[in-house]
Image (tube, rainbow, N blue to C red; front, side, top):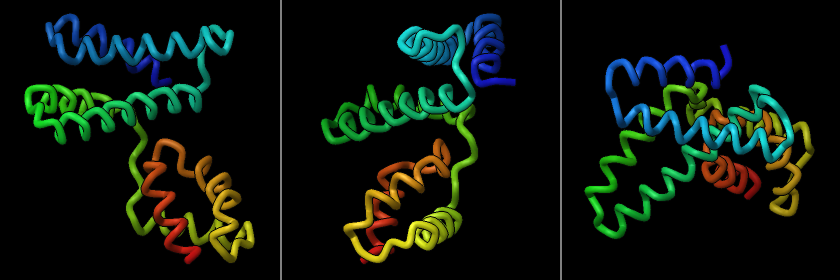
Length: 148
């Protein structure tokens, strides 16, 4: 079952349960996916494209969460945390630090990187492998650490 199918099914369930928060979050993500499909000129998105949109939505909410916490807006923080929880259900299982380090190490070996100047090559090889399974910022820090 694709992410879109699961979202549609869960949207119907949320409607029946009168779960306004879950319904609203799912509708926002489905709208983003539809907009992406229109932008790409397709009827439907591939699994990878759906994951890209979903990852982007989670990242936007995490960024907003950070900003709201700094501004002391606890009323908005709670709502965003719940939205992130709802969206995490559709994301693939996140890699542990050890698993991520292993992927980075293997990729550094494959690419033959030896210094920070090879960072771009390593990042462009690592990111497709961990798409949706790890935060890009975390990967970036780890690659930089390994190349130092």
